[in-house]
Image 1 (cartoon, rainbow, N blue to C red):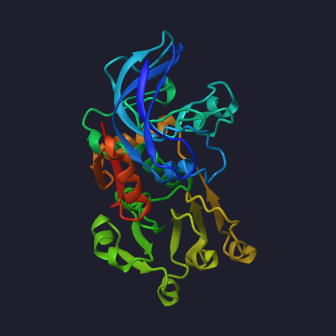
Image 2: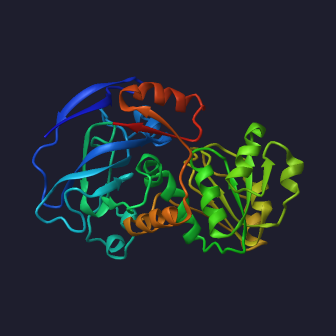
Image 3: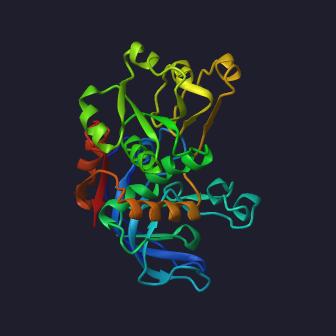
Amino acid sequence: MKVNGYAALEPNSKLTPYSYELGEIGPEQVDIKVSYCGICHSDLSMINNDWGMTQYPIVPGHEIIGEVIAIGNAVKNVKVGDKVGLGWMSSSCMSCEQCMDGHHHLCSQGEATIVGRNGGFADYVRGHWSWTIPLPDAIDMSKAGPLLCGGITVFNPILLAGVKPTDTVGVIGIGGLGHMAIKFLKHWGCEVIAFSSNPSKKEEVLKMGASRVINSTVPEELESISGKLNFILNTTNVTLDWNSYLTALAPKGKFHTVGAVLEPMAIPAFSLIMGEKTVGGSPIGSPALTKTMLDFCVRHNIYPQVEEFPMEKVNEALEHLENGKARFRIVLKN
């Protein structure tokens, strides 16, 4: 099958029209006609080869919403005509200990949607049936794309950390990931404290569900919540004063990062030891948890705040994101 998409031919380049053949569909594979595809900061990182693993040409896009148009003869759980989503992962081995234990996203042989293959900035994309997530009937498809990567990235830590509805929690960085984390945690029942270095976002962040916004550039504001938070989720990818946030944790509190901070994180040992605190991190989540998250979103009407661009204006959309103007996620429409 011929696919028309938009590809980067070299690092830091604009995307250009690009056509390619998918080849014969495999027995466990699914072909999806792309209706919408979100833009994630990871797409920029892959376009620019920030992580040193990009293979060019690359068709980015891994927050895909669309309709199944073809399936292999061994596909399970999805059929032609189903509305589905495909996120960061497009396949896993289905036989290793992690897959057999339901943690497909930790499979060492897992295949990422835009690593060594072409993604969703195109009219069609292919994936394994296990990662082709059926969408709830009532979901708003135009806003659902970012949930398949950004959404599950901030939803998974809530369960990993055992966050309770009675907890007071913090979210660092109120951007594409952070604004979804606030909505999830608010509907989880938590009191949510937002940390932002941009005071102009304060009223908007409060409307999302935060009960308080801390200016992370003001030490006195950070000190005012010392020892009060049960859980902190970091969504930024920059080096911070980690000890200030560890100090904000209550005893037995958990600090969790989903932001891909490239520099080593300087964590003072005594800040952990004396309060029995922990530091952790995670990628996305399993297909089963992704489906649970989508059901939770429909139940509580939780969606990312999105700006929509037509697919042919993908370079304008990427520039909008790179310049920090996105409020708060961007979705391309085919």
